[in-house]
Length: 234
Image (cartoon, rainbow, N blue to C red; front, side):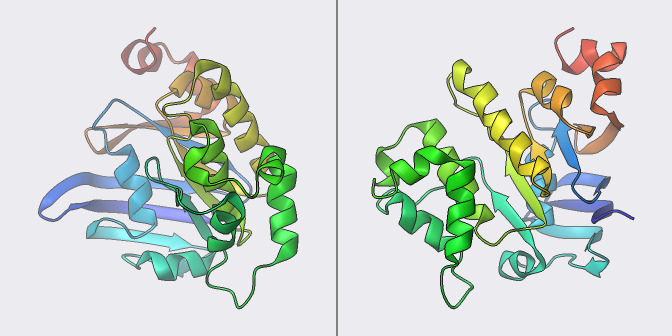
């Protein structure tokens, strides 16, 4: 049985409907990616899981619990972490303060969680007293991912983790996502770098105009001539 199950989801922003009958699921410790052209509804699908869109129909279940249209402050208690693409750090706070913000729902910051994050991202230990706003884009992304890991989520949602990174840092970011998944956390990733994401994932979804178009293993999608020509640049 899947950890996350989304069925016939209709969602958008205000009166604007973006998603139409979207289905997706994520299994225990699975690595799933959502790809597709710009405007396909990829980020909207992810935000809908976390309660950040206007719900119009369908259902979202996590660990067999109905979280349909639940607000983010409730979703995070269910064991789901979310890293948005933009504005995902507190620039005036230090690295450590940013990470501590990830545990704001707890009575005290779990030191073991901090150590786990520092093990994943050693550079953050070295720069724990540095203001996050003075760090490079790649390092800020590590801070944002680390903050989301502070509650040890069962599922981590990542919206375009490689966006805006220098080419030589993209592989490193994907390596971090791989390591998080290999450590037992299921991940659902929206990614424009479709080829690399599909190479690394267990399964992938291709969304087009807010609807499911393809769903298969990453390897099968990479090998599909139609998918390659239409969405992966040949």
